[in-house]
Length: 422
Image (cartoon, rainbow, N blue to C red; front, side, top):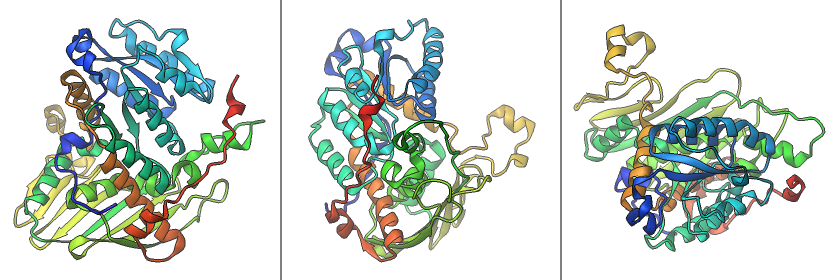
């Protein structure tokens, strides 16, 4: 795959649309979009709950490998439906087991599919959903390995504008980030020299179960296993790498890095921390430091350093430019900086305060208009950017983009999923 400039329009990359032509021009155009969810854990439930709340949509089908995940999510989704005077999810549309996703995809009532399962299953479910004629929103990363990303890219090339498929990078829909990137690209900070990224997170709680298989433990704790999630660069660092690719309109040439498993002694094989330096075109060096350990959440930041200024974006702590062309998004830089009057006027501490709603509204709008979207390539390229950094750190060698891409690395999770069928 050749490196290329990409991401020309923020609205066409991060939104997701799910619709058949008959829905656009037929009776479904003015009714709620019917969504089926594959993967009913915390993340999937939260994303779909926000979507139902913010858009003209409802939940009509659910699928998960674990029955307890389904039972926990059923009252949540039925409550959201009830608030819109929409019927509860039919019992026949609630599917459990290793083939549950296939049963959901066969359901003619499903207009949209949300894939919120562990990363090892993303590309397989994505392919099946597209083949079933569904339009898809799939959580990031595209896959934990190179082979999965390449499969996704090939899938995206076959869509031909007939289906909408995108990957869930909601930050591209955050108004403050979009404006900052626009100002960087138009030259407000001058010539871009270097970029600093960091994502300092606390640990993910370990889920324990008595008398269950090793496979179940790995699935429920997928963030701790490279074969299941791809590791923390693909789980969390990918968000700010995606912002970097977006702002720079390019992909890295190579990377060198370090990392280790310190503070992760109980379970798994993923690194607890990474430090990676990427070289992008035009001799722009990008460093990323990401951690997932301890009990204290740190900060998430992207800092773009140019000859005429510095653009800086934090999840909580402001989005602004200092330099010749100063600019401030209006996002508060600290909780103490918000007065009661500002709170009443709508001043926000989180720079992501409108990201999810904007993403979801763009999704529904594209469904209603039939303006299909294809975000597979950019999602796969951001995933490959994270994989490049991971492999450079694990091997402790400089790795080039082309070398990693040609490797077609495939990670087998070695799961016996049939054991979860009733």
